[in-house]
Amino acid sequence: MWKFLHKLASPPHFYALAAKMIPWFNISGLLLIAYGTVAGLFFAPADYQQGDAFRIIYAHVPAAYLSMMAYSIMAISAGIGLIWRMKLAHAVAAAAAPLGAWFTFLALATGSIWGRPMWGTWWEWGDPRLTSELIMLFLYFGYMSLRAAIDETSKADKASAVLILVGAVNVPIIHFSVEWWSSLHQGPTLIKEGGPAIETAMLYPLLAMILGFSLFFGALLLARVRTEVLHRERRSRWVRNLVLTESA
Amino acid sequence: MKPRQQRMLAVGLAALGVVIAAAFTLRAFQDNMMFYVEISDVVQGNVPDERKFRVGGLVVPNSIVRESGELAVKFTVTDTKNSLDVHYDGILPDLFREGQGIIAHGSLDENGQFQADTVLAKHDEKYMPPEVADSLAKHAAEKEAATVVDE
Image 1 (cartoon, chains in turn blue, cyan):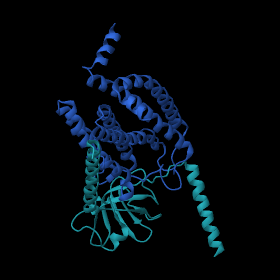
Image 2 (spheres, rainbow over the protein chains, first blue to last red; image 1 turned 30 degrees about the horizontal axis):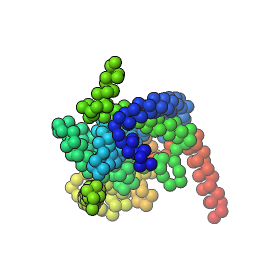
Image 3 (cartoon, each protein chain N blue to C red; image 1 turned 90 degrees about the vertical axis):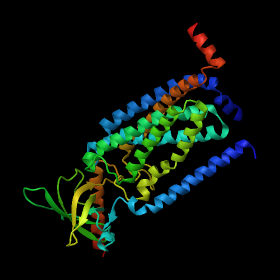
Image 4 (spheres, each protein chain N blue to C red; image 1 turned 180 degrees about the horizontal axis):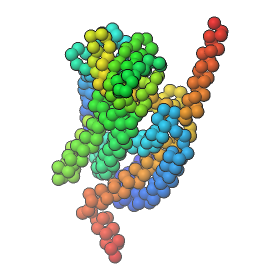
């Protein structure tokens, strides 16, 4: 187990392994998203209150889920990077940030588009779920700006890891905001006592979309970590050999 | 202690400190974190003075009164214990209907009625096709009728 982890943490080994994994993530993610899109938009019944407008759930929920998942991955990677001084972990955190920021933006945008006709407003500052999600978008921006502002990679790794760990307290706040406070945003549908409060014909495409988005995110993350590793190790012997064999 | 364990301890303590700080901050802002005030609190007079606030509750069936030819509407909201009359002059959201959870922003007038300048509809966490909702309502009605007969 430890041997496997040590091997995984070595940049050349990870670089080669990730290349093999990316197509599988892409194919399985694409199949699930295709099923989820068709089943969600055309075969799932309309909602008793929202009519067809509820179908934005198939983009909104996976995006919101991944916005928090990306942040959690970054926080865990940052912690591992700080404690075990593992460079690959810092590379993962750095590579995940723009993806997380985009999913956060997507969650906010789709929620806003849905909120206008359903709630009667594009945005409500008083709502804890909306506000904490927006704070997370700013945390992503702060993380990326901080990294961009420090030239030395190892210093940028440490400073940005501290920032992302401090901001991690926001993730459970986003998740529990609808339970702790009275909010405009509805409570949890999927993870609640007595099982999901959603018709199965609506639920399966949603689960497929969440898993499909996650796999697609995984593929993007692996590809981004590969470029990040390549950039960081640009002076090392294995990258030089790689470039020489590729160009030969 | 090894340097690695020291770093682990430092990260752990820092994380703990952040969590405690966040918990205290959120506690201090507890009143402001509430998106809306419960109807029972409004009726008992537990409302913010001198500033507008939001109330949340369910629209009482058959309580919606519209002025003909105008947008002005009057309805009653309830938290099933207490209720409050709301006046509003504007466009209502699509989800606004009898029995729906709504949130109104505004203030109390001298008659103890709520003058709203915004009305938002709250959506619940349940998703189902209309037929299922109809049959659920029908079963609930039958059950109610059965309990009346039992008494």
